[in-house]
Image (cartoon, rainbow, N blue to C red; front, side, top):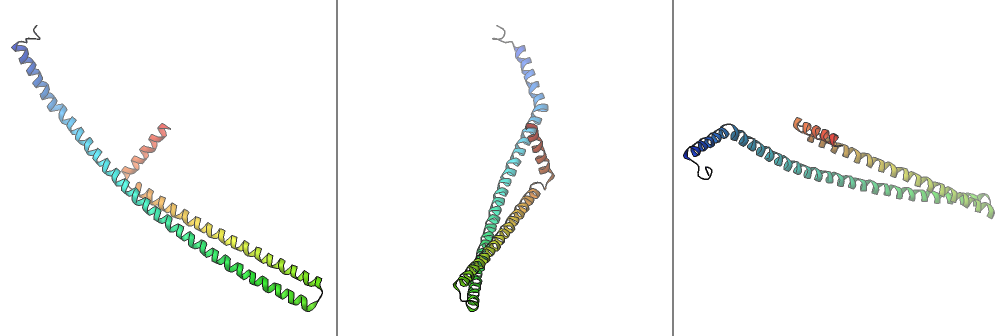
Length: 192
């Protein structure tokens, strides 16, 4: 029954104890708690700003990567177009040479011997020579094409390496970012 109808002394001492606890909490606990909450709020805000900044940087890098890739494609197309022109001119030149050689062989065969068998043999030799020249031209074209493709691949590889180097320099330029990256790698190693 005393709890339902408490006495004045109980109320007084409970009030004193409550005020003392409030004072102790206000003096020693609330300030550190509020300070920790404020620090956490600040660090979360900074982290969100850093994430937004990183997102913007990634968009810019992606745009520049797409630009570089488009430039490389345009350069590749130009090189392939040039290789096709060279191929066509070599084939045309080879045909002309083959025809000239065939005509020369036919004329020399007609002048030296009038027999049909010798003329037929000359035609065969001319055709063989024309085929040999065409095969040689095709091999030359294929070699130049492979050389152009190899050069293009090397240029694209160099561009990719340069982009990766710039990204690493930018991302790991600050000691804090380096530490975060190392912690992230250590974290990955522990989970794996």
